[in-house]
Image (cartoon, rainbow, N blue to C red; front, side):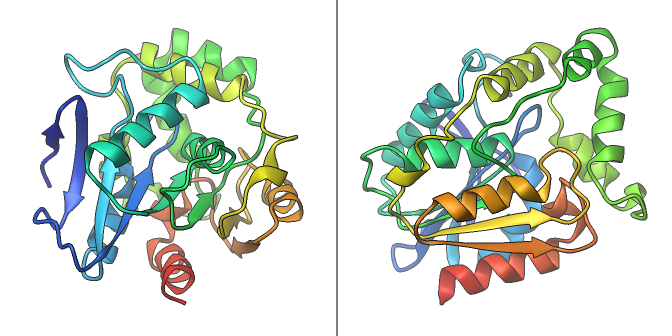
Length: 253
């Protein structure tokens, strides 16, 4: 699947021919990765939806620099929605992408249908060792991100080709992303969210434990928390069939 470009935006789209009779979904990737992370979701949902996965800034040659805050990334996604003339799309984000979704939902921005947040939270503090690893041993960091992003019993070779393709090449982009995560805090703003929200957590996620999702459920009025059992932070790659099924049921019913 090749990336498309419109204006300053690079993105994956399936089907490539926009169908005005279908609703749209925008998938927003997490820190230190790109839009290819959602390849399984693009393939699954494209029969019934127009599916988009934009690259956040800093992923492509000659692209804008990565953003220093989740709020600026949220501005970018709103810009993408408007540039593509999408009418009330569903938005779905994982990890930092989930934080971007929360930021958008807490604004007085009405051009959203509803939202899905995967393995994320209202605050995303990043360990110093993550920053050190990105600065000093970036290739080892990427290997570790895949290894520790799945359940301990999962065979990582099943997802390694796609996972490595989804990793960014520039450590400066990863550092900017993790800085944005580290400074993110929407703990006191969740009450502003009026849209219907599906929250997905993963039982073996060590990056964003289940208590993160539970806090979101307790503080977002119209929300539902579903746990994907037996997988880690990279659940859309590790258990795509189950993740896709839960999201599909939410969007269709």
